[in-house]
Figure 1 (tube, rainbow, N blue to C red):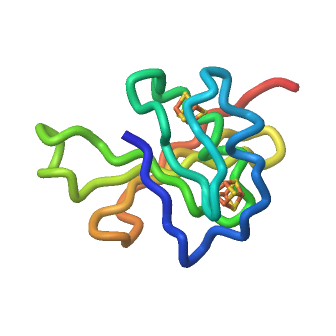
Figure 2 (cartoon, rainbow, N blue to C red; figure 1 turned 90 degrees about the horizontal axis):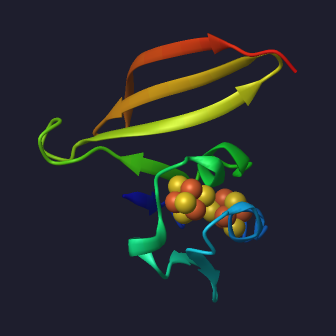
Length: 97
Ligand code: SF4
Ligand code: SF4
């Protein structure tokens, strides 16, 4: 599931606007109001300007201590794996725009 780091969030509301499933709602901070609607597309993660959203990987992958960040940089999609908050692996995929 996606998780928020409210210490990093700047309340820009981009995650709420980009979510194709309307799963995120803004109150004081954004929250996953309808987790059952989220299909883990990572659009909100990619859109967040402050890396405040991550995809927590399921329990059978590292006891929920692994998370994934997604960045869109120029012509590459970057998938960064974190363990206990520290980057441990990275995969880059070239994309045509
Ligand atoms: S991962 Fe996709 S479906 Fe889930 S909350 Fe983010 S934008 Fe919405
Ligand atoms: S996109 Fe990121 S910084 Fe903006 S409201 Fe959502 S979590 Fe906060």
